[in-house]
Amino acid sequence: MSMYLTFTIGKDKRNLVDDITDFHIDNSASTNPQWLQARQNEDGMRQVFVTVKNEDGSPFNLTDCNYWFQGKLPDGIHKIIDARHGVTLDAQNGKFRFDMPKQAFTVAGSYVQAFFRIVRNGESLTTLEFDLTVLADLVYNDLVPSNYITPFEDLYGKLKEYLVKFNGDFDAAMAKWKKDVADLITELNADISGINLTITEIKTQLASLEAKIKADGLPTIADLTNMLNPIINRLDKLEAKEKSSDLLTDVGGGIRDIFTSQISNMKARINPDLVNIGMINDVHYTDRDSFWGPDNDAETGITHLLNIGEVSEKLDFAVSVGDNIDDNWGDNHFSIKRIEDYGMTWFTALECPAAVLLGNHDDNSSHAKSSGATGNDYLVPDSKFIQAYRQNVNLFGEKRNGNSNYFYYDIPNKKVRVVGINDYENPNTLDSDGKLKYPRINTSVITGAQLKWLATNALKVSADTHVIVMLHCPIDGTIKDNPAEHCYNHDVLKQLLEAFKNGTSGTLTSSTTDFPVNVDYNFASKGTLIGVFAGHTHTEEYQVINGINYVVNLNSVGCAGNAGNRILYFDTKDEDSWSVIGIDTANKKVKSTKFGRGTDLDFTY
Image (cartoon, rainbow, N blue to C red; front, side, top):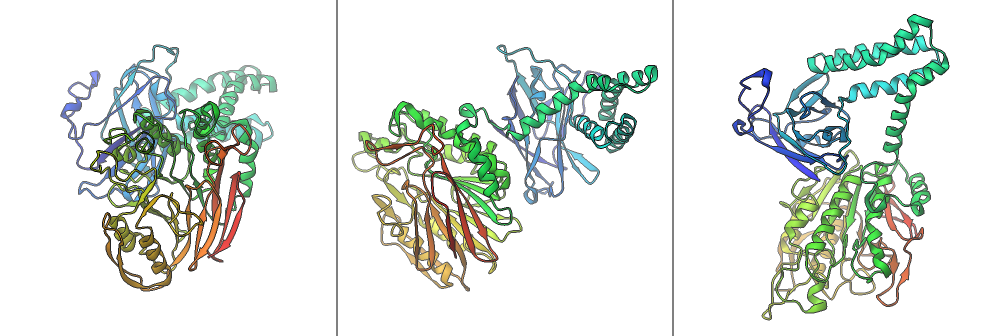
């Protein structure tokens, strides 16, 4: 579950607490009251997306900053100083994410105090407090609260390392460790409560060791092992959890055994010298009937996101290119839930910047065609996609047209721009019979507004920038069969991409009156277009048309063929399929490496 907080440094203000001995913050008197609510036992999935601004409203520059969550638990005794779980999203625009640790939710009630500390080069400032409340969990209520100080947690690891480094020489290891303790205290010298808490923890841990040294000399190996085993076991669990991508690995049963060897193989095949972009499409995550296979097998699709998440630390960007979920053929509530599940899993499991595009199955519009339903109440409203696919927050500095599904993202320091096109901008217009006039299930619409944005923003790049385009439905005329029954303005999009590649100018106009286009374009020099990548057809295709590479990627859902004539791959190593597109900008070469089903593809541009 994601929460969004915004702080304005120099402007946010609250009244002083009347009685410091009975510390209680009156949030109603704050100029910026904000809240976060969670439940006991939550672990890792409660994400806070934070935007920090200057007093004049401009973004606060977070370059080279670290983020600490500091708080005093509802019991008024235990404290949290977590310097481990903050992630920069967009430094220039003042955005970071904090993944709240489970230790923050051990005690039910309202936090005495909760705020973020922003640290850079030994200096720091803090945000205004926010209201953090923890709901009780009466089912699993055996949590034991404790102080959670990540700088000290990290010291445990160093002691273990030093014992190995100094070949079991306890004196040498302890001397080095004590120096680290002193350095930590110096680092925390601006935070008296942090110092006191750290010293207390350290003294407790050292007491038994030092007593043993004074009484009997240096401990034996057995003594030392007994003393350190609890620490080592705790570290091993943390390390194992980190290595197994602890973010949402329990979704759908977690990463399944049928994929583990392929994941290892995929990691080894990704070339770190290339610009690497992950692409997954047509997951069709659903638990409805047996359309994609018997026994609702398509519900396993959510675990495919964990597979690509396992290699995401090697990726520069990743895109889920439509048909992320499947239709419900009825009420939209199940579709909305699956969209929310999908977005949460995608943005949490991946450790790289990422985005999600729409497909023709995502909004439940097949109900219009299959049952002749009237009205549009059964559709998933675009507002749900905006929220679930994070279109209103621009997590990674991607640029959108307002909160549009289409976007572009510049990979830092790589001179590669990823342009995501939404070719399902269908309005929910009804015809004279009260039926949906442009159902996404069989109609692809690109509007003049998006084409203008592409011509004047997304495709306006420096001469040395390479552009890759992604969209769900292949552009009509670039594959052997028609990609949809009705394609509006596909021909105009194709014309625009060719103009970008050739460096020409002119005016785009549409042959349809339903979605008119009148857009001027002017490309002063030839652009470098890597290729146009799509999904939708559940096939693999590659063509070069007028000098542009058109690639169709295989579906992730574990089957092939049409309904009634399926080839099923569920519960086999070939169930999943997605690609890592490796771009060699120096030599203008692409190597598309496939996971699971699918054939690797190499081409030049």
